[in-house]
Length: 355
Image (cartoon, rainbow, N blue to C red; front, side, top):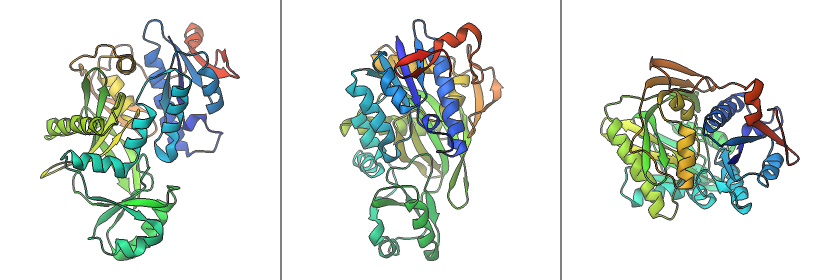
C-alpha cells in the first residue's frame, strides 16, 4: 500500500510558521513515517507541500494528515483525501469539523453528562460588556484553536482587554469562548479508535503561563492516582461525539484536568498529537500500524504493552525515564542508503527519492 503523508507546518514556506511548531511537526512526521514503513508492503510518500500532496493522492491508496484544527486546516486536508477517493487514515472531515468546534464539542460532552467546564460563545464586538458579568477567574480561548495558542486566564477585570487581544490574534472567527477556570493538573489520554477503542495511557502535560499557555511537552505513561478515571472519561468523550454524529477514527487525544474532586474533560483532538513521539517509544506495538488497522477496519488489541516511561518535549525530542524503548523504534531521523527508497517526497505528481 502506498500512503501519502503531509504535515501542515513543515509543508509551509520557510519562515511562514513559528520554529517550535515546525520542529514539533517534523518530529511527528518523521516518527510516524518511520513507523508506517515498518509495516510489510507499505511505501510512504511524504508530500513537502499541499500541492504535491494533492498530486500524490492520484497515485496513493491512502493518506495520513498531520495538521491542526484551527482555521479548518485539518478538515480541509481530510476533505481533499475523501474527494480523491483515497482511504483516510484518521477521522472523517465531518467528524473533524464537529470536534474542532470547541463550542459544539463542549455541548456534546455536557449533553452526555460528562464533567466539562461551563462554556459560552462570546462575540468580539460584545465581549468587554459580556465578560464583566463572568465570575473571576475564567479562561478565554479561540473556538477553533489548537496547542494552547490564544488561550489566556483572566484573573482581574483589568486583564480583560489584554486577554481579548491575545485571543483575537489567534483566530479569524468573529466569536471566541469563555470558560470557567477549573483547578487541576493538565493531562491527556491517547486513544486508537477503530473496531474497538484502545487506550495508550495517560500523559501529563507541562505548561507555562506567560500569561498565555506555552506548551513544554509531557510524560507517558503517567501514574496519576486518577489515571483510571481519566481514561474512562476519555473513552466516554469519544462515545459522546459518536452519539452526536461525529464518530472518530485512528489516533485521538482527549485533554483533561485532574483535580482533587474529580476529572474534567476539556476537549477532544481528532488528530495525531505530540504525545505520539513519546508513546511510540514506550509501547511495544507499532502505533502507526495500529492507526492503519483502525482505518482499514482491521483487528485491534484489547490493550497495548507498555515497556517504558518516557518524557517528550515540545521540540520533538524524547527522553527515556525508565524501561527500554519499544523494539524497532529509534529517535526520528532522516533515512540513508537503501532505506531512503521507502521515504519519498512527491514533486509534480512523481516520486523522488529524497526528503
